[in-house]
Amino acid sequence: MSSLIDRLPLRLRWIFARRWGNAFGFFLCAALLGFGYFLQLVKGIEPCPLCILQRLCLFVTGVAFLVAALHHPVRRWAAHLYGGVICALALTGLSIAIRHVWLQHTPESQRPACGPGLEFLFNTFGPLGSLQRILRGSGECGAVDWTFLGYSIPEWTLVWFVILSVYAVFLSFRD
Image (tube, rainbow, N blue to C red; front, side, top):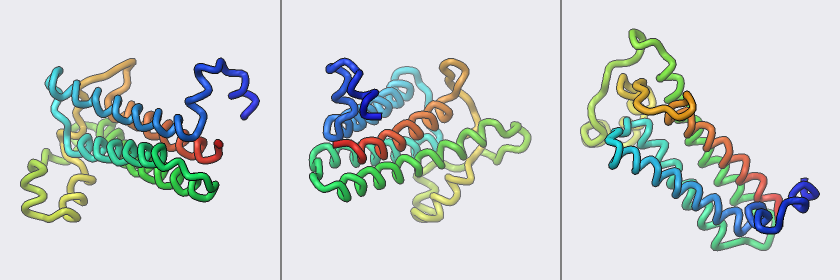
């Protein structure tokens, strides 16, 4: 694998170095979050509760990439620890995205009814009870408001979480 990377032009190799790669992972997460806020604030597409959880996972994954880039541990076990933590955070987001995609592909007649807002859920059921109800999904989570190349936002988020988790593990094996 390193021979393939060595064949890349010098201006592209930094993406595969651990410190710069982790910084790139952070900026990638920030760009994805920025695009989500663009869709919300400029295009008027309101996020559903599962979208908000995916944003939260993307934010935490980005922060972990940033911490790994700033710390840049010398020891291999610490690099693997960062890679594992980032991968676990991305896989958490991936699991939420999978649930969201499943809800979108469920026939409308079988989808759960639309639920209350997040503020009501947290005030009424507390954090854990709210999380359970959010992960069950609601009718609003099944709506497809925007597509790119035929894929919805949760499907693209799923793809990006896979890429981020694989990239984090890959970087943990780099120098």
